Length: 393
Image 1 (cartoon, helix red, strand yellow):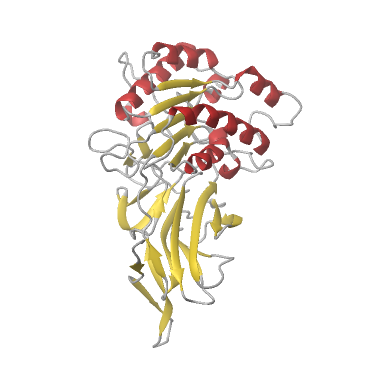
Image 2: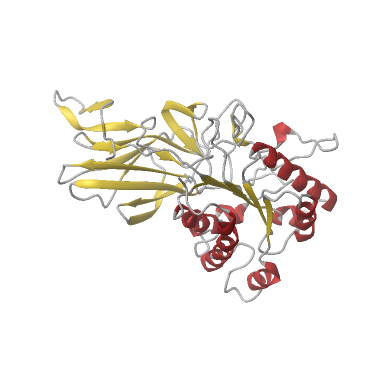
């Protein structure tokens, strides 16, 4: 039987009234919150009690509670102070409440949850669906501005929350604007219309969670976002075989926060023993389109794969050839060099996928539409699932 946590914590009172409001805020530090692995930071590194934030479209969190209230309410609380004057178009969210979806929800300080009805159990999942590709990475001294910062969920005081548990196994998906979901939903950017969301949802059916680490304009050696402030995935140094840590993002969540634990292993939440079970990487499009030298690209690919092997030694690593067949030669050469490592795999959907994208618009173009993304996701899952344990413990 699931243990139940009574909602206490932050009481809210009505202005000018002696009587207490019938609501209470469940803070982000509550075990009732589950945050997607590898995506979120907090007011104390990756933890703390004040907020959790992310800049990654595709990141999500969920919470489940019960109530005896016949007319329950819920309100998602965000800290929007980072937007200031620079962020004119805040990030958009999508949420699912008890199986009903609401999309195009602007990130505002207080977001009433629609569709909540009747007593009993309720389940809310909130997704970061899209944001403008600017002011997201931050600096070592300061947070990015264009982020989603969650501070809590306001519920009726008679509610009880259910502990979420931890992610036993998870999959990290890395890529560029295509993985992020740019123009995926009938020309509108939306991670929930992208291959990464479809693959992640399929893996959840097998007991896995997932984290999406994607950034438009980026590549193995290409900086990300329109402003170029997000580092390349694995920036080579002048020392043969080395990389520039400060100018690489393979081992970071943002400019201030490491993706590694104290043992220098990839970690879902910063603790030891939280490495991903698999890593899927879809890079090369932007490197090729901006004429990155083949030798440099191959060295970056090889170096990053070796770094990932060290940081997640048990993970199955899947290198996905971009759907448009960009950088296919360099990708195949790098994977071939490491072919003795059983845990590195190449997924190549072949020239047919590229031809479909370049043809008559049925699958759109450089940025696939939802039809294209769904087709590619099905083909990717068919190659990933046989390499993974059937279910998570």
